[in-house]
Length: 319
Image 1: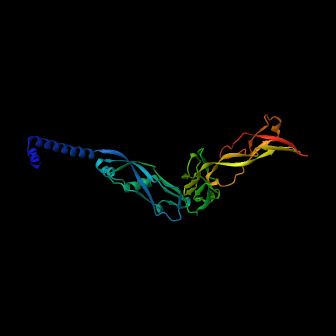
Image 2: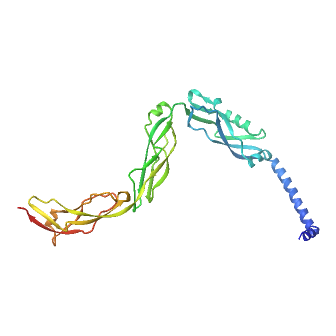
Image 3: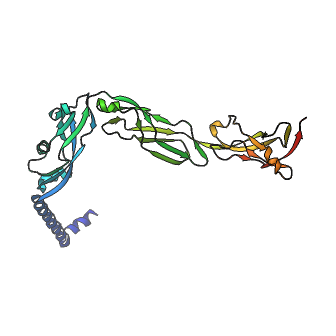
């Protein structure tokens, strides 16, 4: 195989191909040199790092984490930024701390100077956005306040939402001026609507922002318990209603089966289910039968089903 390759390399055709590839490489080098010698304008993002921040300082309005630069230079100067990344812009807190205003502020002139000392002197800065860096802070201690839920959660028709929805943490720290902290008694989650739940849900919900206040943490974990509904069947006595004095209303049968849905965790508990008949219905009853009504008019887990819709009856006079 190697002998065949040596014979092919010694042919005129292989020499022509090699010469062609050589000219292409030379042309590519000249093109790159010409391109890198031209001026060009590019957009870059530079990270901002605030250093030497005192431990008792908490930013309420954070300074920008990045600034966007429009740079102009010859291609050779911009090449290393295209292949890599710009260095971070380091801002010394002590140099730009407006102590009396509780504010960090880097003016447009100072910001341009900082950028110029960070990038190469062969690069021209065309624009910086934002053109200033600012951030409000406080030295006050935080205030601990409870979290309230603005949440609507519903399950599908085969399940139900449990009674206790858990929030972790159930209280958070708020930072701000003394006047602002005095008006904050609690924080509220952002309005959230969850529907058709079929299983317990562990989700994260953001807290609604408050002007002039920083909330830490700004999200909470919410656990919404969801359990299946199970069909339960119990036997209940028929209760007579509105019977006047001196009369007995007797039904046949005296007990009926009632079916209803109940959460799995409550299946073994005793629910008071009722079946009722009304004396006034005897005045219009036919075939000696009375309509049967569920005594529980409202059941949060669905409808109550009676095994029969009517019962036989007799009236007796009590002497």
